[in-house]
Amino acid sequence: LNTTVIDVLQSQGYDVLNIAKAGDTIENMVGHPTYLGDLARKTVKTFLFSGGGNDILGNLDKVIELYDVAHPNASDAAWYIRPQFDTDLEIVKSYYRLLLSQIRKASPNTTLVVHGYAYAQAQAHGIFIGDKFESRGFDLLNARQNALAQAIIKIMIDRFNTFLKSFANSSHVEYVDFRPIVGKSNWFDELHPNGATAQRMAKLYAPFLAAKIAATARKREAA
Image (cartoon, rainbow, N blue to C red; front, side):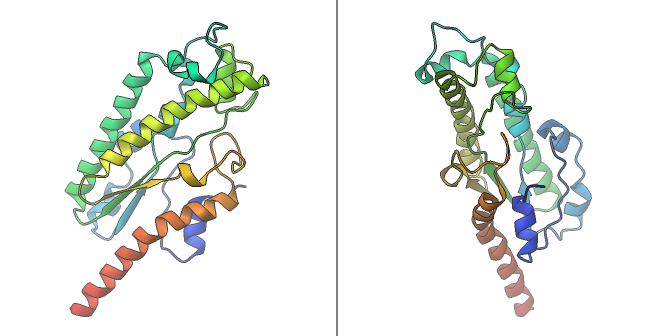
């Protein structure tokens, strides 16, 4: 099994309750929440939320055009992205806003920490992303077409990160950008960074967790 960021944080002594399910969509997670009870008890200091990746990349076969020999280069990537992607992204944004409203209502002092996804790596015959590109006529064993596929992914991931960065301008919301620390060789599979990379990713979360713990300790001392 691959080591995840949550595994790393738990091994470092952080009290992290993991309620995530692999492959879940933000529509299901936020539309049918299982976390409201924990929030209502006002004991959740920080809410680490990872969502939207499956929604953004899970429907690639529906949001990209068929491979076209007239548009073979990475610089053609934007041509392939259908308007449906914009629709899907707006839906994801709406669920992030709903999530924040749920947290503010149930536990106003809880900090929401969101993260932007790094550039997932499409692989030939891959079960997460590669097969979807191949269903649209891409040959991912062809270096040029593989580079084009990666350029398409980059546009999508960058747009998602742009939203999350602006979303974090809201009070009690923090944003973590994993793109600078997850390179092409740092992946366990198409969608998930490997264990060594998870260690580095966890370091980006740690300041938010430590700050909340310290703030709680100060309040107890003051009391």
